[in-house]
Length: 304
Image (tube, rainbow, N blue to C red):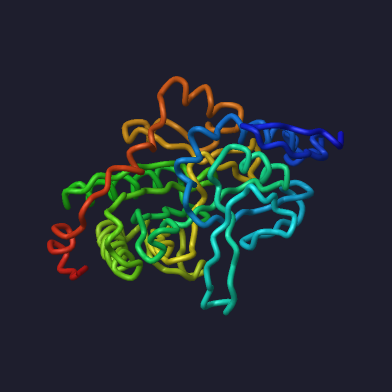
């Protein structure tokens, strides 16, 4: 079906190929992806708003070629806001899309943008992240139980440092632990802190945890990835869809349910009923801004 038009909060734009199947095994279409992002908008937008965005597009479905999109395309509607940032790596300005309203999400879904990847910092303070993140990524041979073990250990160490952390599924095989912080520490200092915690984790669980970046050298160990704490690097947002069978979604969890659920439990079909039942568990990540000063001192780090 082509030529459909939608109006969301006064923004009117055309939709195309709504019946194109993006998840061949499940039969889920682009129209269903658009509908999901339109419905999840009140929950996901606070986690995207004011942050440079990177998207993963799958124009011909999740089993076909995909590509990352950082730079806003020429076809971007004039009502979608952008943020221009000079990239030292590519030595050029990049015009990042900002997701400030639900119509933007729907427009992006119509471009077959499946994954939403926000920066860890906002446009007002691009050099100072709002979170410390630990990406717990299993290697082949790891069990979900081992990933959970490392997640609980991460929380325990942070708790002992007087810090509160929040957890979500990656939407794939891993788990993401977020530590919201006052945005007064540079990426370099945040990364130093995360590396120190990751190394403690690996010292305490050397049989199943590693900070080895080379995949072939990890063996069957969970990679405690602290290197996501870099300006411009991104993790898949909470409530973002993933290009996985079942159309899984990155879902926030209660800590006491981590060992009772599987990442595959949360999909574009199940996450909204869950939200209506348990509420928005990741909301505190946006406002529970914590100082790292005392914790860093305990670890022998100087963050100032």
